[in-house]
Amino acid sequence: MTATAIPYIRPKLYPKQRAFLYTPCRYSITEASTKSGKTVGCMAWLTEQAALGKDGQNYWWVAPTSEVARIAFGRLKRAIPRAFFTTNDTRATISLANGTIIWFKGADRPDNLYGEDVYAAVIDEASRCKEEAWHAVRTTLTATRGPIRIIGNVKGRKNWAYHLARKAESGSPDMAYFKLTAYDAIEGGILDPAEVEDARDVLPDAVFRENYLAEPSDDGGNPFGLTHIRACVAPMTDKPPVCWGWDLAKSVDWTVGIGLDKAGYTCKLERFQNPWELTLAKVKSVTAKTPALVDSTGVGDPVLEALQKSGGAYQGFKFTSSSKQQLMEGLAVAIQQRQVHFPEGPISQELETFEYEYTRTGVRYTAPEGLHDDCVVALALAVAKRGHTSEAMDYTIAHTSSYAPRKAHA
Image 1 (cartoon, helix red, strand yellow):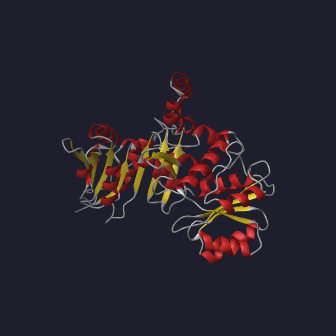
Image 2 (cartoon, one colour):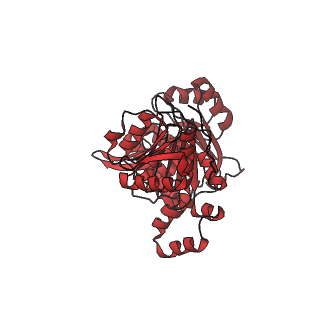
Image 3 (cartoon, one colour):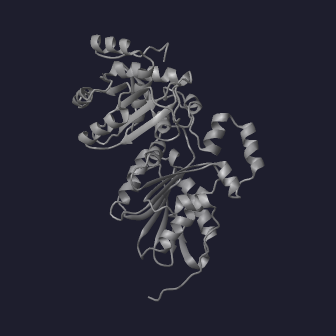
């Protein structure tokens, strides 16, 4: 068969559009404002992936429902040259001249998404798609190792797309995270500033922030409060630490140390994954003689003993469900009273994704499945250490099985 060259002109894309589309990472997760160009960009990207493919290969566009998927189907039919494709309106497919097929599918019936080999995919309005649909789409990319672009508005924090975005934002391998706000789209020339300001005026603040600034609302599961967390964000200082909090790594987690200065500002942050021998040396090196509260639960106990033998001012904290609750309540009070400050990055990200739920035995505090809470724990330990005298700490550790922060002081 003789190949036919068909002219293709990529739509004009502003720099932040190009960045999330053409990242070398296999997974690109983008939280975006409404009308910020995410859909148009992904239509161009998926078309180009299919145009470079081979006869018989499948490419998928997945949206919350088949009706929503058909909106993209209609837009793409109008956007590409007629000589380049044929369509099947019943099946919502576009077949390109090279024999590849772009399918437009709904996520409302996840079981119908299994079984095929897919060479590239887009999940549109991901925060409104069922998590089971994401699982199904991921399986279709297994044999092909195909790339995927996951896009959508922010819709609270209790959904798989939000949690996956946090994994990408924290630097998980082969994942890239991007945010497109309405003001990025204004700068890119595709949104009218007056329209955005009108939306700010007429919409509730939480709705505007989600749909135009890609900022999640606090949907009740965060013990600190997203507004309070944002109010405590500040650059790290260069002042010496008066205390440290250390959360020691277990399995795939991170060892995190946070040093606070006299005013409660973060002045040191250590976050690493090392064997225990190197971890021990690193903790001793950066902490020196500064007072530190160290997670001594389980495998942390012999590490704490080794640290104490080195001559530093290390004290242990054993985690139980009740002691963790007390520790996190102390951190919540410190954050809500603006008595602790931390920089943008891993600390603020983990604080924003941290959750609590009521159980039969009390309140359970934890990171969502697949995410980390090491920075949250280290910060809570540092806050607790800063808020207590050494004498009070010595007495508490010696006479109780758990250490309860004093909420009035925290």
